Image (tube, rainbow, N blue to C red):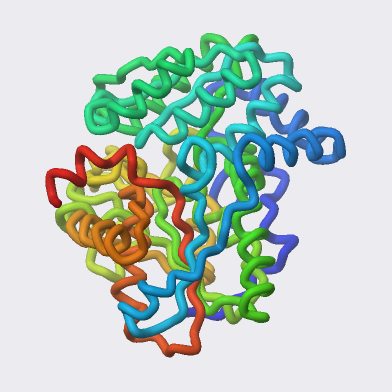
Length: 407
């Protein structure tokens, strides 16, 4: 893997919202004004100590930060290789890392005077976090969710409704995350004056990839401080699952300038390597039919598409990884060789979830289980002196119906 160092000042997108050639703003004219408003308000909030103080208080008192960095002693012994640490984002309120970004954007919505938030969700964790923050801040909330995902994530649908949010099923296309985003954007176009679109990953038009990354970079900042306190040095490897890529970029960001720290993003290998059988955009080294650059839902990035440019269907056992594009910053890091992107299959992810549950007493979300599977594959070949941090982005309560079919 390359030891390319990414200069800190190059991580921030340029004035056009570009990460190298990727990113940008590809939206209807109707959305240009609200995106420009969001960019201005975010810049003002970023320079406002009172905004940071309010967000920090909510992250600590409401969400439960900082999250622990747990030494996985039994998994380390079981695999016989590197020393493994787990960043426990699954212990946050609502059960995943998504609450970091939702609190930040919720405060931005209040700052803009918007009384309503719109969200999309795949696995339901972003929807639950958005519904939670809306209840906390007194905002009305509408969440769009593919009907395929609603069926496999019924628990989270019920949680969102209990929190007072409207959940609207999307029955078009593949009935998954991509289609939920389409409907959320249609709603936003109609209601831009009163509603804020609380996008859940490092996707979409600028400034969303930057904003979502910045609200999640606390993951890596905490992990860096914690590992230095425990081991007196930086880790050798970082592992995280990658759908849109928010939890991964949140972990990676604090280490981009450290040449010795290798970064591995793990995509959904699904049930086969042919187009339509997986959601692996960058894992071409493993033989998956890869993506190529294109525009999807506001941003220029790698997109799984057919020969004639139609967006390909995708498949993953985990709803949160079942998406045909990847965040533009990840596309840029892949081109630079700064991060490596690979994929594991449904079966490997399920086996990894069982292993982590039975050895460490942690039931991971199926999304996170993909990263665990890649770690299980690689750790035995590593030296015992090497150190790994794995980001456990969410807990597996929501996936029990799926997991129970395999256990």
